[in-house]
Amino acid sequence: METRTLEFEEATEAQRKAMGESLVPCLSRTQLVEMGVRVESFPALNLVPAEACVPFDEIIPQASSHFDFSEQKLVLSFPQAAMHQVARGTVPESLWDEGIPALLLDYSFSGSNSEYDSTGSSSSYVDDNGTVHHDDGKDTLKSDSYYLNLRSGLNLGAWRLRNYSTWSHSGGKAQWDNIGTSLSRAIIPFKAQLTMGDTATAGDIFDSVQMRGAMLASDEEMLPDSQRGFAPIVRGIAKSNAEVSIEQNGYVIYRTYVQPGAFEINDLYPTANSGDLTVIIKEADGSEQRFIQPFSSVPIFQREGHLKYSFAAGEYQAGNYDSASPRFGQLDLIYGLPWGMTAYGGVLISNNYNAFALGIGKNFGYIGAISIDVTQAKSELNNDRDSQGQSYRFLYSKSFESGTDF
Image (cartoon, rainbow, N blue to C red; front, side, top):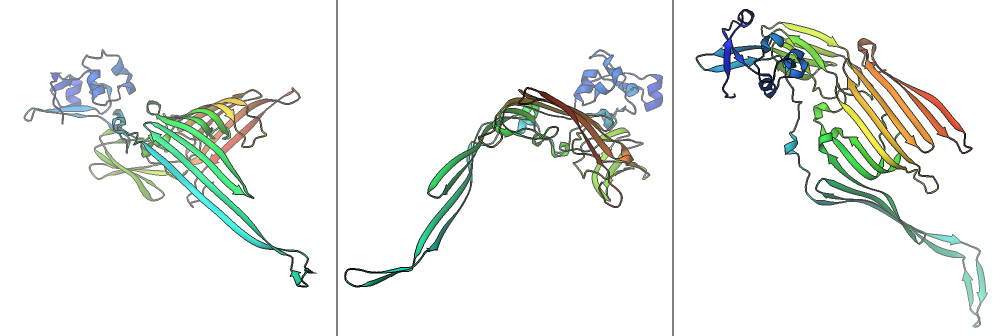
């Protein structure tokens, strides 16, 4: 319940017929924004000056108002689809915590000690005192082997320092190996992680490779659980205050309540790759509407309006000392479009190798989900000759009622 001073104006003839009200509130576009109305979805609202009264009930379908004179209370009703939604599990960024300073150590140690006899030829001899000695030819040999796996870290404010090292001892020789060291931190406004040092590139479009450099990549762990992974947007229209339930494979996976008018459900938790959704709208009078929303997906799919990205630059690390470490830069972009589509592409640039990838995926309803992409690559060989070509990738997913995924 909110208290504020509002102005009222006489209702038009159309408003009287639609709402049965003689007075309607004078609400500006600025006030509608403050109430959480998605004014950007209604172009007619943007044509009115920000502080002028707008006939919102005529512009927004099934929006209405009612003023109770006896209680001096104004009741505004907007369709759920006309309001900005807060996804389930959302935690305000003002409540996020970087954690406490800490030292971390995770280790694993193993070793072995072996003794065994080495058998040679036996012999006998007599010493100066005439005593006979026998040598059976057996020598006792010892072998020690130890291995230490060490993962250490330091948390200080937003920064995370991580190191992975190993130590081995065998045959009387000891060796330390630094597998990798990285420094990372969260970039909250971008919902991303910045990593510097030893890391691996994203593997959504190009193959993931080990590298030493810097990478900025979107981080799904910063999103609410209901916004991670892929799930479709469910849209429908309720005739009255209604209960909306969504079932998949016979189980209820979502239930909410909506006001009359259009509604949009965009915070489904990630489900199986496939399995049609049954949407049930139970109206206030007990009647029901049912419809099926076919659902299939492939791994590259993103939610509508969500951008997944990764930018990396540095040196390639092959994992052995004899391989070259060419410098390279890589950019991956994946964006969820309306109409069940996802567009994606990537660029990989280095001294002797360049590649460009472009693809698109779509959920075709009962047919299934399909994605197709093409990669154009050009490389410079050791004999100063160029080699280029294309590769194609096709992914398809469809779930059948028998429970079989194809």
